[in-house]
Amino acid sequence: MNVEQKLQQFEDRLAIRELIDRYAYCADTRDAQGQMALFTEDTNFEVYMDEKASTPTQVVSTRRDLFPVFDNLNTYISTMHFNGQSTIKLEGDRATSLSYCRAYHLNIQDGVQKIMIAGIRYYDSMVKQNGSWLFAERKLKVCWIENR
Image 1 (tube, rainbow, N blue to C red):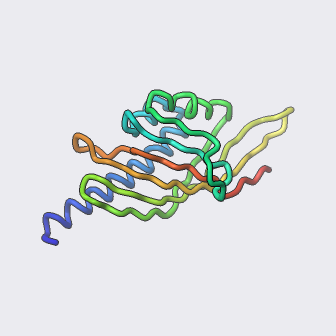
Image 2 (cartoon, rainbow, N blue to C red):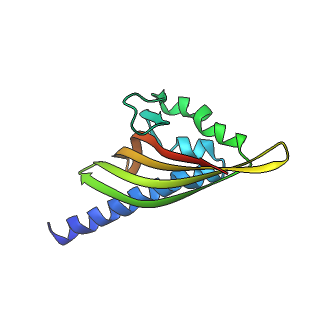
Image 3 (cartoon, rainbow, N blue to C red):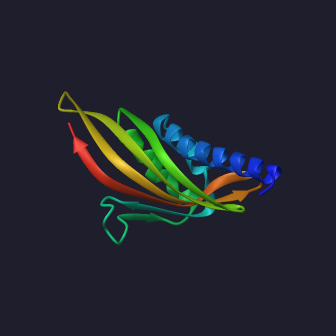
């Protein structure tokens, strides 16, 4: 691999990590439209409330149908997503990744502050379109949930 290829690979890895982090930022700022823009038109988004389940709890097959999923975060007073480690495998204008996240969801029930914390793994497939990386597929797998 020559220097130009290494530089391109570095730039792609950085752009993919920024895509992963942008998703969390949009979630926490309730920017559902911005979050949707991170996906391809024909995206596949799957939610597994139990990471060991073989079938998803929810499947969304187009970018425009993601709005209710992301808008649902408005049921919480506040959220905070902390992204952890991620692995990225590049294959030209395609990539796959596995990333970890701890998501905090704050609510008040009967005058009492409640927090739900979820350990999440994201299994992603991304494509580079018009010079930008987008999620082509995202599988959100909940590893555990803690309620306080």
